[in-house]
Image: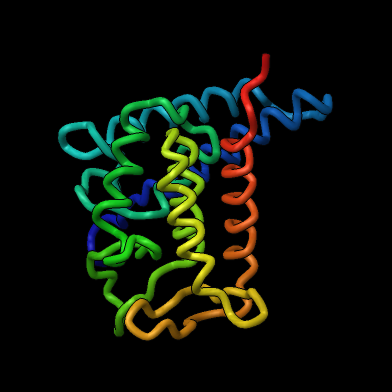
Length: 202
């Protein structure tokens, strides 16, 4: 036994998503379910994450409870609706990831930079790169979102496909190819950018 397992904020947030969407599905479709208990568990989890899932100064989300390390998976926090895009903690987290977890050209995003106990070096995660573009659009930085999006697109294969990871030094693909999640993130980022380009209503 090596002590208590790390409590990853990404996993906690996805558990919150499961409860939140389960409540919405049951209520909107009139399906059976103990939505009162689910709501209580969802709200308690939300509060717990906001206590333990932030940096010591409370400015940004962190990789694991009470550990001041960034993780690009935290970009999903506003994407799934855990907090609004305008929340200062969201804006600070997106900015910190863009500053500290990207390659020198800002086109690709590392999931994290701390040791994970596995051999070898991690490449940049394609999904996280498109999540960053979507997140930048979400916090209102359309120009930087467009730049990151187009830079990431430049790493596609000759057929326009992406793998799971990219070696920033060589451009070589790593991991699963083609990777479905990479392409879902691409589509969602493109949709977010398209929305920012739409003219304001009357």
